[in-house]
Image (cartoon, rainbow, N blue to C red; front, side, top):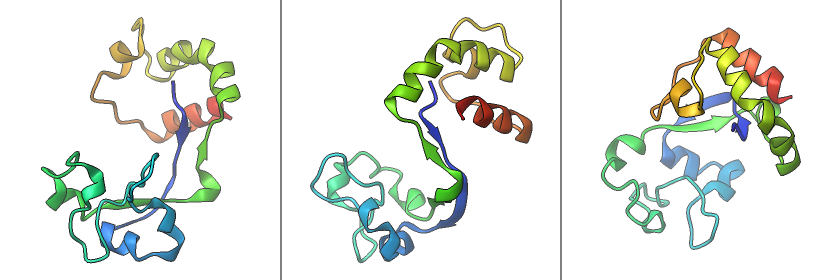
Length: 126
């Protein structure tokens, strides 16, 4: 199931994101759920990531996607439950596939969508 969608407003480094006052709540710290800005104020690896992204840190720290809040949405539990029964059929239609499950249609690694497919899925989610 898709739980939401995000239109990217801009891409910045994790350090720029860390220093953006509008993204303070996205910083990693000792809490659960945690943030997803994985640098400290100096740009070093944040220990609260627990080693999860440490191997790829040199590359990951360069790119942080900031969402356009007016054109992004996370679905609530009620919406997800209401859409769930039609989800497989929507994936089959969107990807012109007869796969019997999400992994057969989009694979473990995902698929790139074209503009029409994106609009179709957003319409389904609304």
